[in-house]
Image 1 (cartoon, helix red, strand yellow):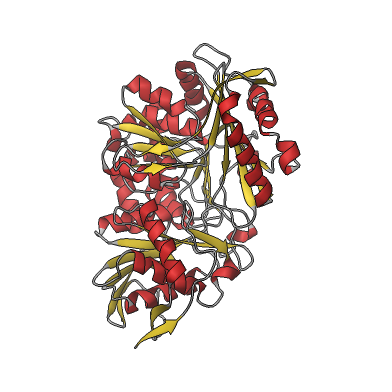
Image 2 (image 1 turned 30 degrees about the horizontal axis):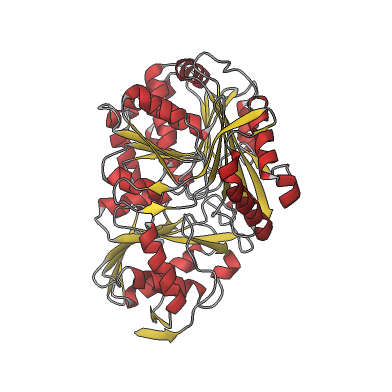
Length: 542
């Protein structure tokens, strides 16, 4: 029943900040997936007697990969695996199931906001016992195991039926297929004032939620329409498709353009929202106004006490380093801790587990709280709905009131995609070498007040993360950050983050790109971007 197959290391199996991501065809190559899963079991000291959760976002190869994982799990002695029906689980729902059932961990199959299909992207990540992404110490063990692997174990049995809810046996391992939505929906009902949100919809509040043919479709239908009473049709593109309807399931103004066009038109509903491939990111748009993820984090934190789960206040707020300082200003006003971490949700896990923070967020459209150990797109949308239901005001009014109180952090991220890796690394290396001499220098009319490479000392476990992004601070409240992204699958993505604070009594009504013109120009000059990578026009601006 169990077979041991000979194998050898395969290049390119080092997990990034969100697991292992490659082109789908790479994952489909012989032994590629098998090696990585077996290496993961080696890193977690085997599977004997363990309980795991498995599910994915429904992209191409999801079902086949799950069957392979189940067979390897059985051969490694796992006692029980909980799987979402039809292999479907949003990333936050998987995190919740791990925590709810006291599981030892879980495999989540997704490439997040990247496109899906046989010629697009696929990914696998392992989440630990707390429901969060594997910490760096564990991913290092996983990678080490991929470099020394000589064999993998697998059960020679038929596939298990994932379409029917219930339990079955696979080579002595229990496989429990559960409703993908139910437990998560119950959790949301505990966190938020569903009655207040229902009443708001009954009073005529309108909304458009674009699920982008990704995993949140079933969750949004069940919660927004069935439980909260939003009119049928509120959820668009709600059926998960293996190729996301040939779209790019990234909830930002570029890839969710139809929603943006609607929200900027005379026919706009009160609220527009979207989520990504695996359901952990969100976009919030009011009638005539886009809310940046950095601003959304700050505004949710400032108003979280209006939802039942957070009525006692927050213990602290955490943000990734490239995210704007808007949430820091809220934390200072509330008299609570503000934490700045490297990019990657796993860095929030220790802070959440230690009770140091309640709400976390990233500029890349991820927001979440201590209810799970992942960012959670639909959670953010529901918290916005709860706040609007209590405050009885529009998104635009809430945003303007926030800026009047705290000032505005003008902010944009500029993505330069598929840059030749050598050129991207040269830009970063040259900028790094220049850091000691940059303070006091000027470019594009801005003087540098600080220049460093961000490193993070974890206040909980004392671990240190080096080389997490180059920061340039400018006199007058400006900042530029340079980072190479670890979420793509080909070439390098160079990300430039620009921020300009208005001041408490400053102008909060400028066009964002006008407000950032000085910082952006200075960043291009100091990095010698044109000379190094041959372009200064980004592929995506968010």
